[in-house]
Length: 318
Length: 318
Image (tube, rainbow over all chains, first blue to last red; front, top):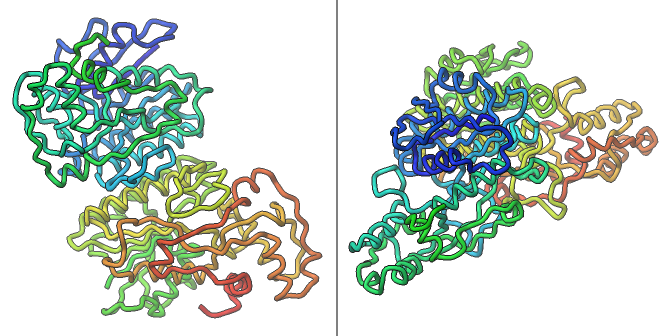
């Protein structure tokens, strides 16, 4: 079994590769050969037995080399995230669209269709979001180029799945927390920063209001779901190949409460709310989310705020 | 004013070019220079004053040449239709996706954003369609590669419109009648053939049932709508840049009745219905269509079956 991971050096990719190396792909019948691809792969992030490939997936020669042998499962995580691709359209287009098209085109020529797990995004829905709820029938109207590019790839992958050329699943990921505190092109960094700052005993100025609501998932639970997508039997999957993952809908106030329960009441006093209207509009007004398709396929969120927090800060083992 | 038409030799393109040459673009303040592009452009289809460009729009050199001067309005009609692109994925992808991406990429670099009128399709909705109705909030789930490719381009063009790089409008065309009776890759040829056969006094075996319903528009009314899209002031258009045109929903029985009223009752006896399940499923079960966005922008359908018929057979002047 040959498994390829793009974006393997990223926040989600590193954890996915670690879990794959630890035999995390339930039901894999033959020994897994795992290829990890990224522009940079720090050696300490590569467990034993992983084949690293350093390079840019928008390089056709790199794609040809990866595809020289058939792939059983491709996790395509590499992306230029929302903030960066909004600021530099050409960069986002090159990776999120053109490189992905190159991957898809090559993969579709394989004699035996690969399972492709594509990390899509809730950014396929633009803002303002519907007030009452988002569900599997909600019309995606992206208001970020990142969301538009991901939506285009979803549409193409659903067509390849229908034609039988790629057995693709596109998972629309919610905000994955808690990302490391460094610049990564993520507009929504505050969703992660608040966890790290408060856990470290620091003061934190939250750029959205206490009432602002977001859809969240821990990295550990995200990787659980990616692995689930890789092993789902094709006959269980319907014609819908792109859908939202279940997510916990939490207000920033609820996040602070969960932190206070874990780390003590003084946490509450260390938080100031200074809402920025643009951030609040883009990321802070998420209505309830209903994920019937994903629920039926066995995908899941973190359960409750306390569990999300424990996993987000990796206080528990995956 | 420089106007470019791709697919100018096609059924809709020929009529659009004729109308443009006759000064059909209301409100054009300067003299129009019109460039007509297609793989073949019969001289008789080119009115005086039109600059013909014979070539393949998937050729980058051709695109560069077209874009050497700024464009004010681009009508992008060139496409490989549903049947042909379903049978030959590579051909459809090359024209409907790659050539269109090449056009969009070049157009987006223009200093002054062009108005781009893109002929999209109701095939962005797959089958089965919702039973009760299709409206501006209906989720597009294509079940033909043609529809998937058009939907991808809609998504990209909406993003360029949002960013202000291309002032794009994507019109989802219903079945345009009556196309000439010749092979053209159109699955839905029966929608046109029935008009021609019955008008010519011939017998006709209809491959869908009398009760089967479709959304139809005459070529003349389609061109009215394309011209309307070209001159709509940008400030009247909202954020929704892709929507269905209004269409008459007619059963094949109603089409036959309209023909009988025009050409005499013997028309009814010349029709036999021999439904083919696959055609009936793909094209024969269209629910009511509600087109609030298009209605609000002044787009319109043919009014009634008798008017549709008269225009479809070009018994009236545009």
